[in-house]
Image (cartoon, rainbow, N blue to C red; front, side):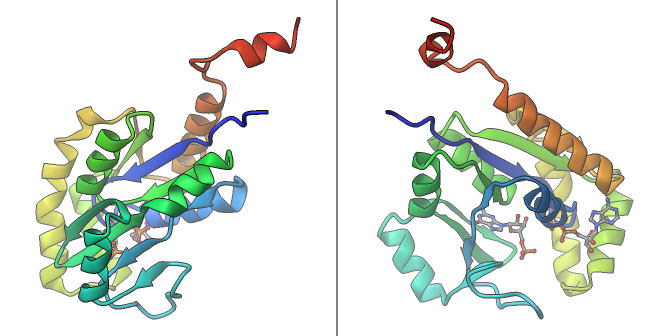
Length: 201
Ligand code: ADP
Ligand code: 5GP
């Protein structure tokens, strides 16, 4: 019997908006897979290779680009990030839903390659609050924070490319909205309705 393919959720938005936090909360409550990206960024304290990212050299990353191993990849603030293609495809074929937490450039590449992807844009309540979050996270130098903030408005201007937007003011509310999107997508009438009708014949 053919299995229903899983759904691909892309969660994107300016750096510091809260994508990582929201994905973590969603994964605690909903049994979805998370796509672990490859990056040339050095690991931050507490980050685990294979769980948070695959931390690799620029040479290894570029070899993967050359082999066509990425669904999308982009340079984000001086480091390279990419989504390994085979892991995503394997999960979808198994009927598992998978969540990608990636930047806006990568998100638009995924939309082009897989138009069926469900595109969610996460917004900060304001750019002042985004600055507070980036500074509060204390993982980046002031120079990197300024670059991330400088990019945020340009990214927000591309919101028309997305299916859904969620403002992350209160984290619980934002998580609940993302979960509602997932529930609505589960209830969407599929292109092939024969399987549903068969249950009633
Ligand atoms: P991103 O993955 O989008 O770069 P993070 O998930 O790392 O962002 O969150 C950036 C910072 O903002 C973190 O310090 C996080 O604790 C904080 N944060 C996330 N969501 C909220 C929220 N709703 N209210 C206040 N702070 C938040
Ligand atoms: P950080 O260095 O703070 O973990 O992530 C920086 C940015 O890179 C975030 O916006 C994050 O969503 C994005 N990112 C993480 N993994 C990928 C990926 O595989 N591809 C792309 N394009 N962006 C990614």
